[in-house]
Structures are given as structure tokens and as C-alpha cells.
Length: 263
Length: 226
Image 1: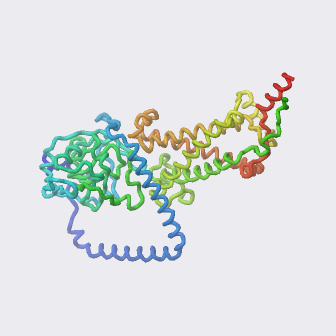
Image 2 (image 1 turned 45 degrees about the vertical axis):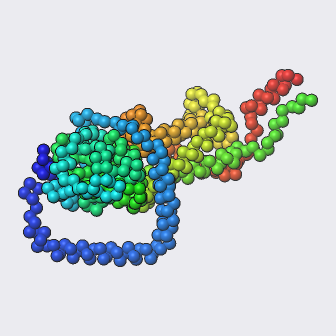
Image 3 (image 1 turned 90 degrees about the vertical axis):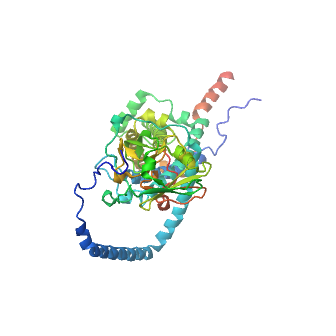
């Protein structure tokens, strides 16, 4: 299947949304939004003044808890088994479509045009020439039927396929002794994983789900799927990969979720 | 010269020695943190549709704070639990306090309890129901830690996770262990409040105890040989 003829998205009406409606009301929508933000900011400020003490106490507690979380990162790194495989399942157990997860609702997914999309590189990568979807989709595929576990507690079995990340990193001449692999996403999401997880045999750059090209909400044209991390580490709509030794907080870790997030 | 066994040695030996009291209260804090933050985590994907823990009862304003508390509390719970178990085994406290345990004694105690004839005058002796509850909550405590480990690392410890079943089964087991511990805490705290001297004993150490079983044996031996 060509990367540009993807599976019809279940999340877009067959005839599309009437765009004129949005155009007519755009000014109104934006205005409401701006007022909402202003009001929100003001009440947040007021709240801070009212409970100034609590907020600073909260900061101290947060500092301590985040230090423990960083310690837990190290513990998880230490107990990680680089070649231990996660359980795999039969294709008959696969849930279709996969369960959606993001920091926004499924209706707000902004589909990517696979015809003009490219994958770019930064950091310790020898060959930084961008890849097109066509080139990527021509690479040998690996299939994983693995359990997706969300930090919230739900899980499902999914069937993902695409190029193996280790092979791909080798192909572009990435420094495999570097510490981290970052994924910069089209929706301003960022995620990073440690190199050991990136090199794990069950870590792929997924392009397909259950044999069909990924649907928009699940990361078309390219996403990460690793069997060794919680759901939120599996970046979707990847537009760039960076290999680096510098640690930076990522979308969820900035908000206090554990960075390593190993399972 | 042979001296008769001295039953008055180590006068500081209390019903609840200091290390035990310290570990008891550390454990109380750990259980409080783990259950409160566990409820916060549970709320994000409930197991029982009708059960949602109110915000006033959970620890952690946001999901990530609940998780942070839980993965902080686990260290206290586990490290303190290891110390407590080692202490209980090494000093013989578990053996002295919780054994022997007989089904007949258990039935008799239950019967007494139902007829409100249970006596709490002697804090130093646990009745059969107490023995069963204390042993049971310890076993559940071990199970909740093991199932928690399987939930935390279902891939790294997949061999362990497979013993329990699939991921949701492990969650349910972890949840049931929590329910059992919460029920225990409810009974334990209620009884401690009804018999306040037991609560005081856990703070101050309680009555001085003569190490009954082994010393009685020693006394008998002394008599027999003299």
C-alpha cells in the first residue's frame, strides 16, 4: 500500500466537515478563546494570592517528589533487561481500531499530509538527509503484537509494524553510544527514550496498524512503538529524531510524570 | 555456683520494644500514603464503575502527583516491611505472638466475640482472631507488594506478571489486597480506640513483659535438675 492511500480514517466524516462554517465563525471562536484564557489567567493569579502559602508548600513537596522520581528513573534503568522480550499475542487478540490517547481529544487531531511530510534528524546522526514517507515505507518491516499499557491503568493488545528502530538508527549513522533518542512531533509533543530502550529488539518506528497504514489519530505517517515503555512514551506524528547526550524534560515529564516510564 | 534463672533481667523489655514501635508508625504512614495515592491513580481508570474515590480522600491533586506519591511511598513501605519482617523473625516475636494457632481456639474466640465476652485485659496475649488477622494482613501485605511489582514492571518481570494473569487481573488483585488492608485498618483502628491502653502501649511501649515461654521452660529445667 502506498503511504498516500491510507486507510480511511474512522474519525473523519466521509464527506468532510463544511469548512465554510468554521471560516464564517473563526473570529467569534478565537475571541471566545482569548477571553477564556484571560479569565483563566486572572483567576489562577487570584488563587495563588489567596493560597500563597499552599502553593509554595506544594513547590517544596513537588521538588522532593520529583527527586524521588528521578531516583526511580535510575532504578528502572538499572533493572532494565536489554534483550528480555515483552509477551506477544495472537493477531486474533488485537483490538481494532487501537485506543486513542493524547493530551487532547481525537477530534482535535491535525492530520499530516504524507505526500509532503519528511522525517528530519538532529544531533549525533551522521547522515541527516531527510526521509520521505515513500522511502520509509519501503524499508523492511517488523511486526509486533504487544500490549499497550497506559499510565492511567487501561491496556489493549495492538498489532504494529514498521522499520526496527535499531536498524534504522544504524542506517542513518546514529551514535548508538549516545544516551537519548528524542522524538519531535508535529503537534508540539516531545518524547525521549534512553538508548537501551531505543535499541531493544521490540522497538519500532510504526507505520501500520493491523496491516493497514496508520490512521491519522494514531500517528500517521510515523510513530514510535516500544514494548518496554508506558503508552505516553510512544510519540506519534514524528517529524524529527534527535540523538543526544543532553537530557531535556519532555511533554509529560515537565508536568511531573515519570520520565523513564518503563514497564 | 548455679543461680536460679533470673526472670527480672532486662527490665526495659516492653510489650512493644522501641524498634517495633518506630516501624509500626512508619508503616502506618506508608500505608496512608499508598492507599491515598493509590485511590488517586485508581480514579483515572476505575475498576468498579460505581466506585470513584472523592477528591477529599485521595493524595495528589493531579494524576501525576498521585503517581509520584505512590512511587515514593513504595520505598518506605517495602524497606520498612523488610526491617519489620526481619525483626519479627530474628527476635522470635512472630513465633511468640502469633503461634501456636489452632482452629479450635479460633472458633472459641469467634464465639466469645459474638457473645461480647472477649477480654482485652491482657495486652500481652493475642487471641486467635487477632493472630489470624495479624498473620493475614502480613500475607496480604506481601501479596500487594508483589502484585504492585508486577503492575509496575509487567515486561521486565514478565515471568512474575504471568503468574498472576493479564494486566487487568493484576490490577484487580492489587485492588483487592488494598481493600483487605483498608478493612483491616478500619477494624484495627476501631479496636485501638475502644481499648485505648492498646494505643498508648504502641506509643509508650506498654507493660513490661517477662519472656514467658522460654523462661518458664528454663525455670522448669532448673527445678528438674536441682
